[in-house]
Image 1 (tube, rainbow, N blue to C red):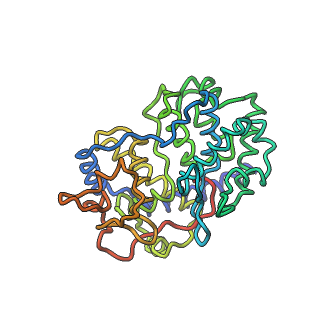
Image 2 (image 1 turned 90 degrees about the vertical axis):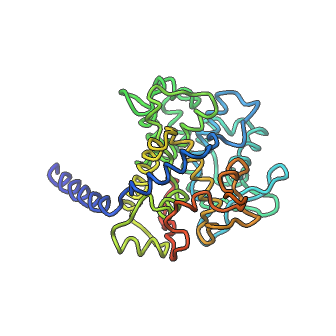
Image 3 (image 1 turned 120 degrees about the vertical axis):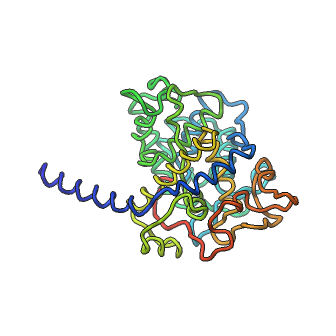
Length: 355
C-alpha cells in the first residue's frame, strides 16, 4: 500500500511540474507594470460598506460567511448575480455583499454558526432573491453545502465567532504551529491550495481595522478568474504550452492541476509586482487589479483604448484611467501586451467553488 501511494504521488508531482513549466511569470512585463504602479497613486484597499453598527464579532462572522460563498457570480451562459439594494442596482460581489448585509441587519441570527449549520437551500435563495429579477444566485445547493460545513466545523471546534480563530493563532497568517491559513483550510469553503478566499478574508479583516498580523508579509493576494484573465492579457504570466494557450484563447476547459498552476503564477506575479513597485501591499494591488479587470478588461468587450460611459470602474480608480488629454481608457493600456492584438486570451472554464 505505501509503495502504490508513493508512486501515485510521484506521478502527480511530475504532472504538476510539467504544467508549471508551461506557465511562467514574465519578469520583464512585471517590471514594466511595477514602474507604472510606482508612478501612480493607487487607492487604498477597502470595501464600500463599513458595516457600521455591527459588533466586531458580527463583522468577523459576516466576512467569514460572505467570502465562503463567494464564487463565480457571472456563470457563462447564465444570468449574472444582480438586483436592487437600497435604490442601487448592483452586480456580482457588490450585490452579494449588500444583500447579505441587508438580511443580517433584519435578522442578526444569520451571522451565527448555529444558523449556518441548519440553513436550507430555500433560506439561502431568500437572502439573495431580488424583488424584480427573482433568483439570480447560481448553484445555491453548493453554496448551502459550504455554509453548513462552515457552521458544523465551527461548532465542532467550539467556535462562536471568527475572532476566536485569530485568538487561537495569536494573529499568525502562515507561521507557527497553528496559523490562520491552517485553521481556515479545515473549512471546505477555504481549502483552496492557492488560498484565494483565505487571503481575501484576512485582507477584509485587516482593512476593517479589527485584525493585524504578526507575519503581515505572509498576506498574499487573492486570485480569481478576473485576475487570471487580466494578467494573461497584460502578459505578466505566459503560457508556453501551445495546446493550453489554444484552449485559453477559446475560453475552453482546464484541469484542476492547470487551474492551480495558472493561479499560482498569477499570485507570484502580484507578489513580485508588490515588491518591485515599492507598494509592498498585495491586497492593495488585488483591489486595483480586480476592479480594473472586472470593469475595463471584460471577457467579451474589453475597454482597451476607450471606456464607454457605462464603464463600472469605481470613481476612486478613474484618475488612473485618464490619459494626458483627459480621455478615459483602461489604466493598464500603456503596458498591456494585448492592446490592439487579437485574439485575446479568455478566462477558462473550470467547475470550482474556490473563487
